[in-house]
Image (tube, rainbow, N blue to C red; front, side):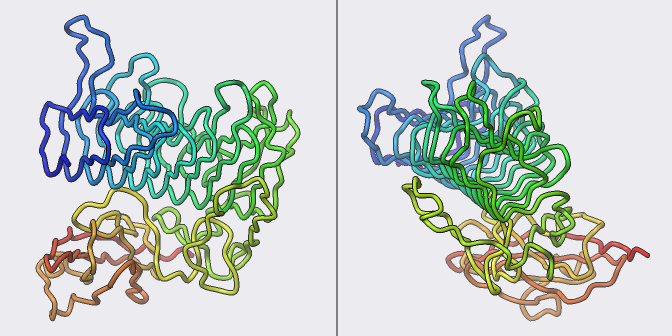
Length: 445
């Protein structure tokens, strides 16, 4: 158990280990190229490696609550069947790329890859995975892909039975979520993409193969679309793929946008300009608008609808009305899921810190502190008072317990700036939060 280390200019390699863990470690400048020495090998990086093991064996290794910053090369390489990855930050890495070393992190046959935040990275692929029966959930993938021409934020090639769910992919020049064709030229099958959101990405979603379930996803903007390819040369037909309850601009069967016939099963989707149906996507609130066409409008997907699926269908976290909603979020839910790395303090404020276009009826939402049991919320119109406020002061508004992360501050005044703070409490210890601010947009006439 490697725990609590600060690695500076060094990496960690676990070779042929079982039931091992790298936890609560920070890696800074842990890998770099040797171009100045005339050496063009791939940089040595932190890894858990069981590649010499036997097929069908799982090793029980894990990477938990670690940060990788300021390095050149793949931040982490996991070649260990059954690997568990949870709460990992990858920031300002992969300044150059060499050959196929185009991913920010790679995982071969993991069990779960959860709560990875990837930001300000050069590589063309965010997370590259392999194996079968892997789940990629609650990852926040942004600002990457400046190097090389291909790629996606989540990309699996030649594998089956993958699940992508509850992820954000945004603000990058690549595809958002991608299933590729199997290595032997046959169709990769039995994947699921569900409850994902993508925005400010030109590519959208790419689905190759067949027998996939694509449901309750959101895509914003007019550049991308959902490609459910029907291209034999790419071993893709998607004839048995089901796409349901999605809110996306359009579906296409090829990159020519209309040359190939769409044979995938499309049911109960809303297409076109999706932003108009959401509460405030500009400020990261992707919940449906009250009374809009997404609310209570989703169909229930039954096992009989996807008879080929061997894993459980991902269900909504919560159903707040008469039925589930179309898209990735539920109107009226008590919890707002926010993906990504959890710091000890609360983070990812909604509305975002510094925005000047918040709605007068906005809710305050945030990503919880790591393993926090409760959160104390402070709110007011004075930055100084909110910053120093404690329980008992007028700025203290509420203690929220468990997963609760939505607070209604009431009707706010257009043009006015408000300040708020979230303190995370874990094991009786309070981690004070940053003072955030937002300005309510002026009324439009």
